Image 1 (spheres, one colour):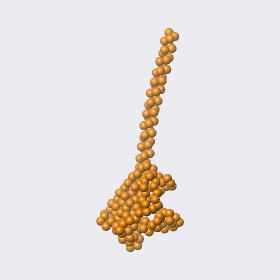
Image 2 (cartoon, rainbow, N blue to C red; image 1 turned 120 degrees about the vertical axis):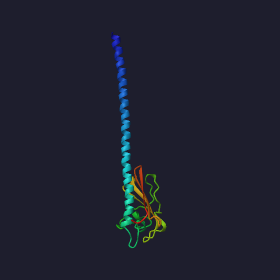
Image 3 (tube, rainbow, N blue to C red; image 1 turned 180 degrees about the vertical axis):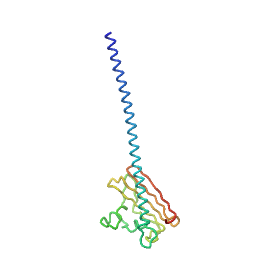
Image 4 (tube, one colour; image 1 turned 30 degrees about the vertical axis):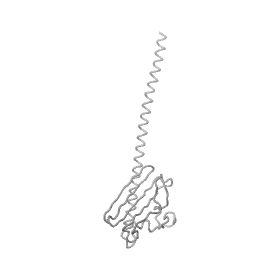
Length: 186
């Protein structure tokens, strides 16, 4: 009888060990699922911020086009960069309150994305007063390096379609892009 009790104690130890293994597997499975859910939520939050940044770029473009129009001009888009120092407006006149210091033209590559070179305004008619056939590229960083939050806008004004603009918002690894096409000055 002594031996039977000893054998049963050994079996209960093995059963306890297997039960602990099953509980550990369930806990690890749930932890893995929860971690992936947290990552999905974090990425969706970053995506929403990137979309908001892209929208901010479009809003800034439309603000310049409608509210910062040089006297006698029909568009303000060409004035965004053309009235700035063509070398680099944000760095050339850091103390000048008349310059828009959120329009950057220096060559920077945040997150490995190639930013515009010095060709940030180009086209046959980038005249401030007419601005009928021109492309403007600008980007704005909204935080301190490593530049995890920014938007880049490319806007083209042409005689046949008025305005075609694309805005790319970036927040960490999330990128979202908006495109606006207008056929007439509204």
